[in-house]
Image (tube, rainbow, N blue to C red):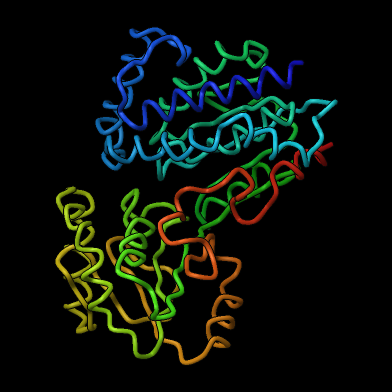
Length: 348
């Protein structure tokens, strides 16, 4: 019964998140909150940009809508049907990143619906959204109250840990938490494989994979694999609608800086006044720049993907994740390909 009520609680939270994400007016108590509570959440959303200049209202709304959409009772029940509910609950610490809004939400969800207690160490860049949502989640599923802990200082007593950060921060994770059962996530990025047969609409959808959240997420495409005869003007023409991104001062600073550095070093760039394209086989590219390189055969594509498989989060393309869907993962799309629910069931 408790598990059923917790699933219902997350489903109710999902409805609330979708409504907020779509900027809908308060539609009544079917959302599970009063009009004043709804407006309070809207205010928190609007203030994120003050706390973190990358968290524009548009990006926060996008995150709420994408996460809320997957939290239906059918989706949750189908997903959980493959796993066992923990009969010996553990305290699972989570060190969350702050690169995009609510980036640690899926770990939060997995830990609670596996029957464990979540001990969250929030990023200073994203420290108010999840606690605000958790307040209402507890209203919807009161049994979760004792199993949600936000730690302002040290994590305290834990049995296992999930930590997300850079390659450098992973060294510290290993030093301080390596003796616990753990999942440590390093730098990853995403890649798009083009065949040359893409429609203008598909290339426009690829723009979402590149530019949502300003390209700061590991699910953002930073590299294009393109056929040897692909005309990049097609790509530039399709993504022109994303031009307003350069009006954001932080993004514009990165665009201007990278453009200046590479031109001063006499490195060739393609430029459409809001994103830079550089021909390079390097997987990772600087912010406001996308790397690309051309291939002659499918075997070259497979060789490159295999070579970088431990650094790639999502592959976008006709035979992979659909264009425009990189930032809309499903419940079983686990970061780094590690099944968190299965891992939780084995924590002792």
